Length: 331
Ligand code: GZL
Image (tube, rainbow, N blue to C red; front, side, top):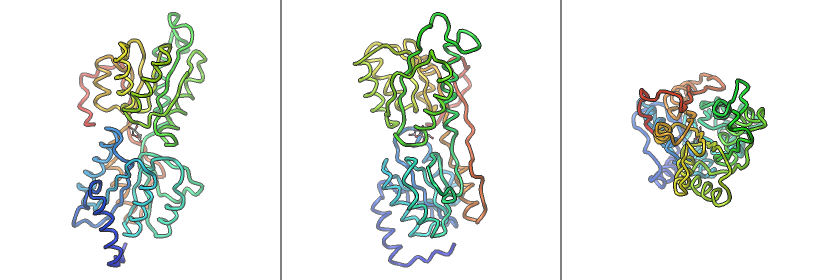
């Protein structure tokens, strides 16, 4: 696309981007395709790996990447997308922090003729044509996988009914991700799809820890001030799980033994906790989306179509697996 870089726009944008120097990685020089990448923030090891994956893949492909860290604020993401439009990037790639509130800015991108690639998280739109495709993970399946592990763990027989010695309710505490985000909603949905078939399994408490370790700690500390009568923690990400484990250990509770823990992401610390018996199941959510994001963005920049949905490959690690051959996770 020919960019009519009116000097005043370029000046304004360079001020904006230089003003964000602390969060702005300067674009790679000498590349043909320009991609504006609006990232949520750096709330977890998963997110940091996700960002690094995109930056490395863009550099490798010689793509000029404008990276903007929204520091957990939707309004910052919207501002960044508007600046990408003003600069007339070839493609906008963004990770929507929450499902709603994107219509206006995506209509502006469409009116500017700039294709939009959704990355990692999904959005709610009446007009699905406002973006060209989605690359990420199947978060409903992640929730189902977490529940399926629990059914096996407590199964007394092939129906998944809890074993005789665990007769009575299996009481579950759910640590949810950022309220209104697609992982928070989809993981909860997939988990309940399975758990609700077994009346012995009961979610007795569910609250958002915003994917943050500090909030996972606070939630668990407050829960333990109220009760110790629960059997399972299902956590939407490892950061919150690690915070919850800190709080449990402070009270002499043995994570993975006294309380069964299922967590999501599969960062290194969670795998180490699985190896140590402090976690019982780790559902992988693959952050290494950079190469596919760059591949799909390049196709859009060339005016090609892309698949509406592209899912990353992922797996589930449990206490029953041999983890000795597992390479370092890198996040
Ligand atoms: C899921 C991703 C989530 C991770 C968290 O695809 O959006 O956001 O599970 C991260 O660790 O904060």
